[in-house]
Amino acid sequence: MSDEIDSGFEHGRTPVGLEHRQTPVGLEHDPLEQLEAGPIFIVGHIRSGTTWVLDVLTAHPEVAGLFESLIFTGNGLAAPLRPMHWNPDGSRDMFEREMGLGQILERDEAIADLSELASRWLARALEPQHRYLVEKTPADASAVETLATLFPDACVIHVLRDGRDVAVSTMAAQHTWQRRGKENAPPPISSRHLWQIGLRWARQVASLRQQALTLPLPFYEVRYEDMHAKPRETARELFDFCGIPIEDALLDEILERTHFSQLPRTGPEEFRRAGRVGDWRREWSHVERLLFTAAAGEVLEQTGYAGPAPKRAQQARELLMRYEKAKRFM
Image 1 (cartoon, one colour):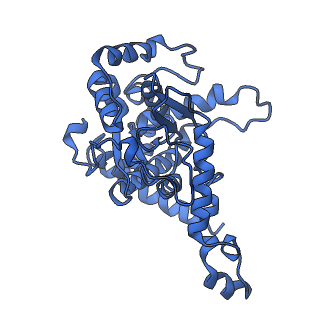
Image 2: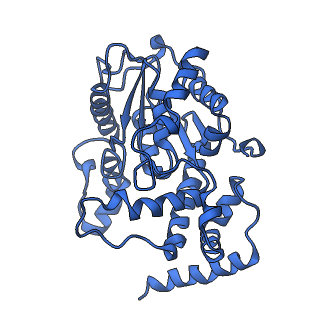
Image 3: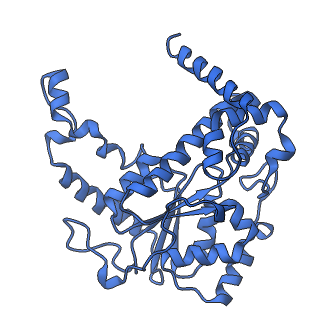
């Protein structure tokens, strides 16, 4: 499937040698100096297989891993870099005075401070044998912009999965493990929410793919479906992109160890649910397929997961978009 699409993404990378790594601005000592290359970040929509890719890469003995540190999200280090801190003219127009961090330091100083802080935090995950560091968060575009600002020698892996299977997995999680221990949890989402799930998936996938073409970081897009259909080839390409040397024997061992059948706590009510491809075909009614296609049909087509949306889906989208617009004035 992915072979049919010219995404414009970079599918290779020359490893950055230790002697070429640059110490972060303002630092005399780089907390990550033992790494052979900049940090590797895994992003993608939730329930897209980002954890699987993390497991494969961090099964290598020289790779350290962090599971959803949330360092670079909107609630983390992305917040101090928001434009509101660096818009003195706008704040003076509104409040007749400045606001935000720009009152006390320059943006370059903030970047240097945040880069030092992030480096020190990430370094806590390293042990003496580690030469590479992978962090995964199902992140949005603002998080990718933040890590690009703080780590210009980083690289990004975008895990892409058919949005319809993402929606099936998201709904299953809402009904099962995400509700455990939550007595006052809101009602789980139902099929009528497929419109909203489709909109979110399409927006995030589109924004991440656009960043791959505009941000000065090496991006690699790996498909969940390829991890299933051709695991050895796909894993080899992942390690090559990251610049992580790996012998065939170790690669085979890693793939066996991280295969879904070998993982603990899998099942319909677990975090790792089924690991299948195409569940939406078995589980969705005609109306449910129409709802999701109305929301995400254009991106499904752009990514090669579906052909042009049928006329009924286009009509449904127009009606639902009018409803969304009307809600803003209610």
